Image (cartoon, rainbow, N blue to C red; front, top):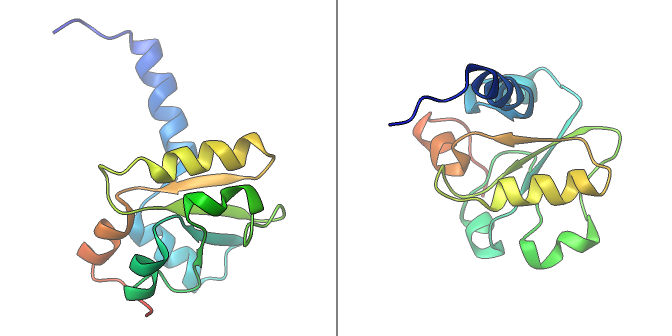
Length: 120
């Protein structure tokens, strides 16, 4: 294994901390009324089976509508799991269009694993 530049590692993890939020932290943000909007980028059928409370469904086919996003809030984007890159792709797309964004680490799967509230 090749040694990784400490500077690159520091930059990467600094950015990760700035632009990601864990499930327990997001749950606390919801409960305390933080200035956030939660965007679920999974398919509509999966959203309807269960989603994070107060989230808005915006699957990839509808990203260009920006429906549900808010320029005056931090838009927290999530998808299926840690292995899914839809949330990261969505966050980049929305940020490229002027929206403040963060990504939920671990996606909906990790939210469920933490036994947090789910709406249907």
